[in-house]
Length: 84
Image (cartoon, rainbow, N blue to C red; front, top):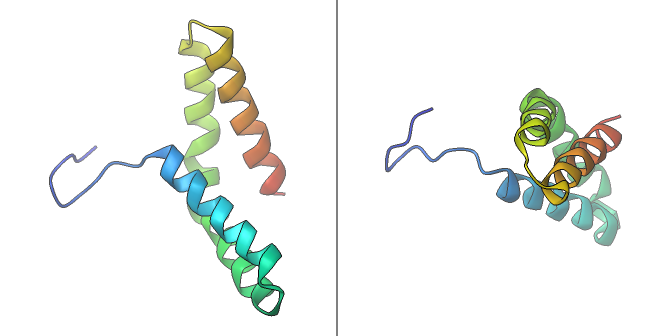
């Protein structure tokens, strides 16, 4: 992974927050619902679903506490559910 000043690494929290913002806008701005749902769908299909399931499986396997195991599994399940 590149880690230079002009190339930032992926941060799952920021990306999941962006997905949440898109979904909230789809709910609150009904006149642009299709636009925001389309953006959320593309974010999932073209990016998140390509790496989040494996990342969360690795996180769950490496976690030493039940909290982080549950967080990883819950995140994976939610992404899988939303991505359907």
